[in-house]
Length: 334
Image (cartoon, rainbow, N blue to C red; front, side, top):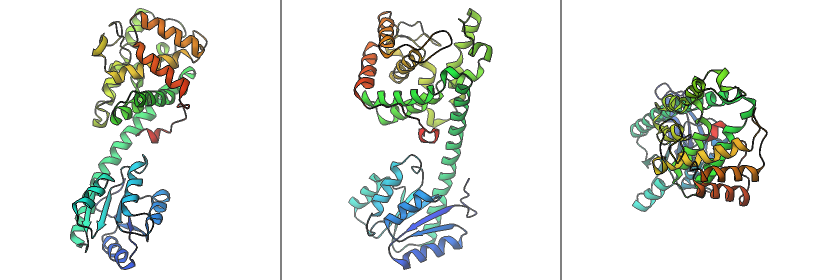
């Protein structure tokens, strides 16, 4: 983890004027920071792609790609999204500041740069970066734990990746807000993390569960919610984890919710979960074909279990769109 106070952080300085680069470099290296210099926007992008960068100081007006464009590129990629970006500029108009904010800039410095102001802003943003890194590490542990649980059962291998991809794609098809689509992507991986509390002889049983075993199994959404609840970034994920086994008629678990009481995002993940379970091999039956799975789901929707309109949307997604189930690296789920 970087240290904002002892100079462990690597800072990118991008400016087409050598004197400006040298000034910033001298100030920062004097405080013990590691400095990576770039004389234009293209070199700055190359540095971010190939080096560890904890913070970027970007001149706005540069040959080739501008600081605005470099900032927007950094903030558009999951792996660089949380790098703090400071735009260093002589521009003072409100419109130009607004453009920087729209590109995702975290802060601004006006030329000529005051060294004390520069260091104060750098320290502040690097402290925030430390907190973000800690959050990412916690999320990574949860995702790794979820995948390790999945790996115990050869019949569910790849289920989390598929569910993550399908759920997010279905959410986008339904026009859900971006933050809910991100929640669906995350929930696809961690939705069954509560199964860590289910004994293996129950989890891997190749015959129907008895009443006692079933009561144990029905607690896994509650356990999963409890495991993930300390992360504030999972605020929208928690209802999906808890309610993805509810049914419209109230016969689901753990809370027996009915109809519109079930969050829409939980219904979205639920319908993709049911489909994936039907079209993959299980200990107690062989995988169904796409047509058989859809027919089964439609029959179950008539019993009051699933939302038939979501089944229609999922079928349309599978049949008419490009394949959405591709291998997803856990690092890209954030």
